[in-house]
Length: 145
Image (cartoon, rainbow, N blue to C red; front, side, top):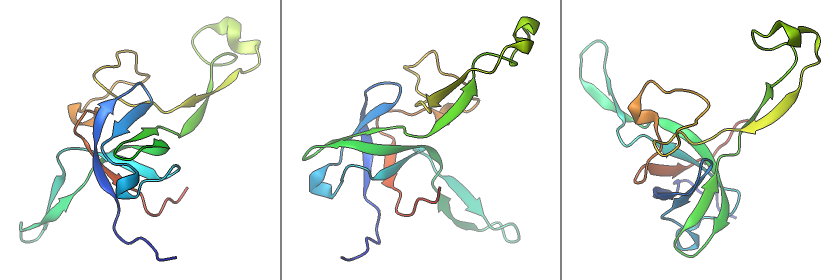
């Protein structure tokens, strides 16, 4: 089987929820369940040579990675997949009564940071870090976890 050298590229067609997006690429473009994609900033960052000031090029800025969960002919659905363990009880917090209680761990999925979602876990400083319809996506060919 030949190794894929060029990543599949597309865009977010619709934000479906706090973890899911619909992409404008599907089976016809070679998308398969389990593939990973990076959602990129619509604006890249220009890189200048520190010595000459000449423009060396532009690099993409990833916002979040998603995994393909459903594929149709012309559209696919992707969801965030990274998790983290969070202590929601026990020693955490300013409440000293919890000091002697055992920790209570929960697994939480990474969520999309969108302007449509008001109760996101963390505040973002940069407006460009929000995920939006029209954001470009690019397949992740080599995932090193």
